[in-house]
Length: 260
Image 1 (tube, rainbow, N blue to C red):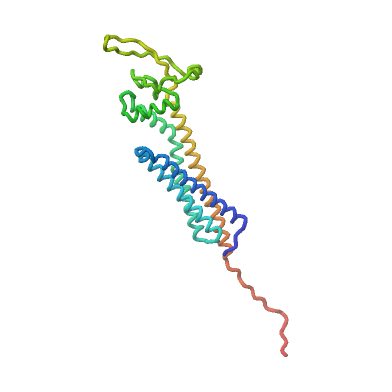
Image 2 (tube, rainbow, N blue to C red):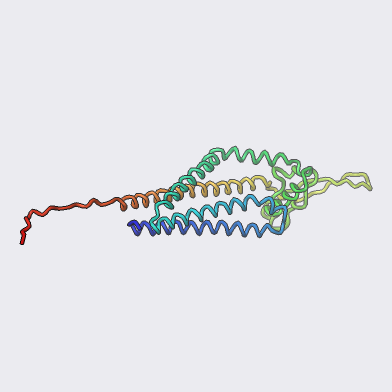
């Protein structure tokens, strides 16, 4: 085996083993998510692509890391060259995704807002959209996507303030609505205490945080891939310098030999 700097070699092996563990964690999270959605067939089918991406990313991360660790531990040139090329490809691919995403971030928010406005009014939307919106309203304590009027005259119970704490915090709003009594053919006015906060600003905030996390992961992994490429290049340089043949120097003695 070619002679390498032992400290740098151990550091590189540790670096790769750490990322192999990260790849295994990604695969494990994908498995946990898959089992979590196993009870609902429709939701599970919608999440299949996400699970496949997690398996692919985790598998590639583990394979690259183990290949780099093997090449560094055994002083193997070919595994290190493959690892170097893979790191450059991953770095370029991640930057290719992250840079346009960061540049067109504001446009993405506008597109998301336009998609939400397409489902209005909510009282005329599909059953899936209404159920999804009502779940959001219950969990986030909000009413409507952009206004409670998104529901027209059919404001659902998920908009209603649930307890005295919500009323004391000033998060509720009194609205007027009318009921038609067919037996008496007259309209009567009533009031509902609903959540003042609309849902889209909250969802927009979560979307911004999720986008920040995604961009951080992309740029972070790109930087680590570049670091791995530099470290493997250093090891390859050490391998090359250690395998250069040392010339043999013959010296001629100046003292004449005496014959017996």
